[in-house]
Length: 591
Image (cartoon, rainbow, N blue to C red; front, side, top):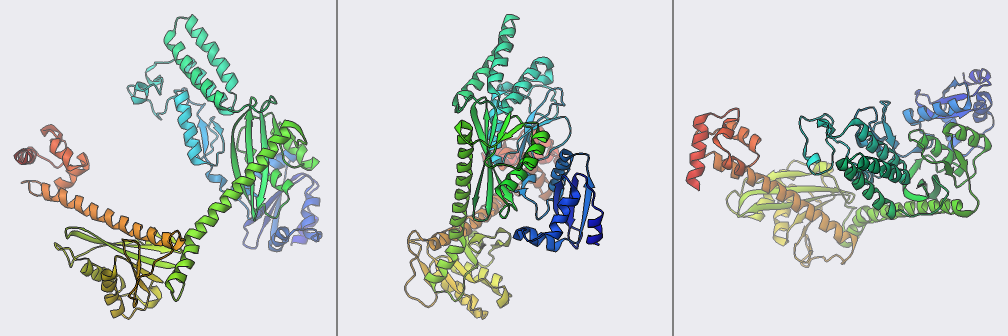
């Protein structure tokens, strides 16, 4: 079937779509001449890399879409890659979740906010940004500089944002649509990096407002102008070359990172890092070409020139330049070359830091587990660890927590908590530990047991747990972790084990112990709050379960219920006057 399809391939530009036996799209590509490009995959595979050979082996069918030009083919290829995310294409890592700043130009009084959805609704999008925290910081800065509205629907009266000077209240006509649009255009230019233009425009508008004796509006423009100037002064001037995007590329192990430096009006505004999935076996030229297509297909180009770290093929350079309508070059010397080198170095540094973080995480998790097996002489690697802690207040509301660590990391979905029944009213940690271990391990089979059980406590708590666990015939290792000096008590040994100070195994034991303590304390406090609320309200005549729940739902705390007026109490759906007055008499008598 493939041979027959190859005979009918057109001599036109277009897109080809490769599919596997299940009909899933595994690769999308473009071609100036479809017939020549697609046949190369099947007729001359000696020069193909391992990735292409693996892909070709899985091709069961293919489709072609003819386009009118190479640029149309490029646009269609970008859209299909974003839609289907084929396995063998180079893709921006998790690019579907990258945040953007959205300026709602279609609205009469536009807003700016963070979004992860691109819609054709007349809005302008800025991004994508790889750092979600950084984009929120940028939005916060924008709202301080430019007091645009933040509400989705106009309120009936000015809100707190207006009172603190963060909004100009277009909802009640405190500013005209014409003057508001001046700020919107300033936001647009600011996000594009043209701060010099923003300053110039604001200065003109401020002067004009002052000449018209509209001093309140002039003061608003003045405040915005001063804020923008303050931000501009902090930006580093690097060149007089204008508006550039300098792209760097770096590789480390099997990861590839592209980094963009944004230079606007000769100033470095910022940078973004992007990991490229599927680019490890591809050339730098292919990786950069794919990155350009995917990044600039979803963002507005504010640069007059894009600087690359490698030379692209003439064919790719021509199509990309025509599609993006911008000059693309690979500088060999001078300031532009230095900018690209700086982007390369920063991309390399990003990958090195990422690798270092991964190494540290591995040392703190799997590495720590390996260390623990060695120091405690365990029969097998303690991949799954369960840790127990007891919490109570003078014997009241006694609870136990069980936290689980898998390969040195918390597995929160497996956490459990227990309300202890056998020691209610009297503090007895040993009996509490016997109860919780009996409830946990009484019915478990050997296949479902953890590799290590950790008891938060000394030799007494450990022996209590061992008494129960061994009575069920379980041979799983059990240790006790003393709070003082963090000594580890092991079954059958009179002397505790002291893990080396500064070792990852010690830090792992501290983390699991602290997590068990936190989880137990949280549950204990919740029960105490519930008990305190119940004890006070249940002593009031006419307040039952339904009214107690409704009161707490409306007021949120017992203190607010106490301070509520009669009228406020009667607003609660299930309350009547007699019950409300009874409640007020009760609290008055207590005072």
